[in-house]
Length: 71
Length: 356
Image (cartoon, rainbow over all chains, first blue to last red):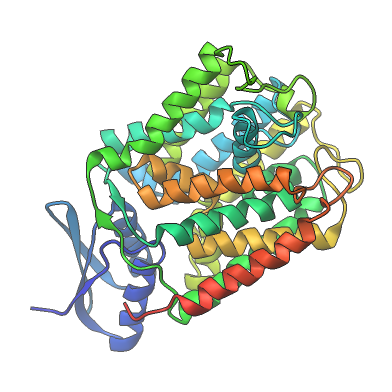
């Protein structure tokens, strides 16, 4: 299982910032981010696509799990 | 539909609608270049409740009520109503307080800065420059680990408190109870006496609330995202607002370029700039412009609601302690409070950091 970042409950733009930091750190590969608002999910998805990463979103109860990868 | 709202076209269209609606509301009676100013309108509500006694700025603005209720409605329909609270509420209160202090030194929130620019008010350029600098300082704090901690999921009723308060305000506006002390106060002259018909204001507010909740429209976020992650998505909304208001102002002959004699504005460049540096920094540290905080409070965010309450108390202070500007210039204590506010925001930024 890939590494998961828990960004639930964080204010905008923290979820985007932690995701971006992870991208800068690993450069390529795969990781997951879990968020609890649709806004965070939208923002991370948009930023990831802009940065050339693939995003897959899965709803998990009240949360969203985003699988983000760059092969 | 969901895709449209998430698209750049979608948020541009929403910005355009807000800009057009604001300028049309001015035509219908709202104060000039103040079609839908969140800071000014919260200040007017504060005055109407008697929490400040500046008799020219007292009115229960239906637009504000509409923003929260519209956002609530949209969030419920989209299953995005998520009651949450508990991320440093006292800090959010203080940030809301000083955001309002700064906004009333400039005389407007970011929305009004754009509306003023769209009406030809050159002083807005200083305000917008200040806003950018304030947000940029906030980003430096974010990059160095600033973070107010996580909120917690909570009871649905927690998320309904701010909408309930708005219903209470609406009842006060409609019923106008005769209370011996005189509240609610309604200005008979000055900007507070200028308003569009209640039903139209409320409807426009609700529609803006719905659209803004769906698109996450945020003026502070627009600038922040460009600086922080080179993302122009939210800026499309800002561009729409500016374009919409400008076009309608030209059509209705509400456009009059210049610095001096602009409606509800002053020409003290330094304090127009510094007031908005304070506001921009406070918005950035709190994660949203005043409009966005209202929409989030409608989505169930109790911390955003506390920010809004901070703005209301800030508005009361601003007029009671003479920090709010007038067309003549900054209030007696305006510059002093801006400095105090900046010190407070820096203390918050420097001392509230942790690893996520």
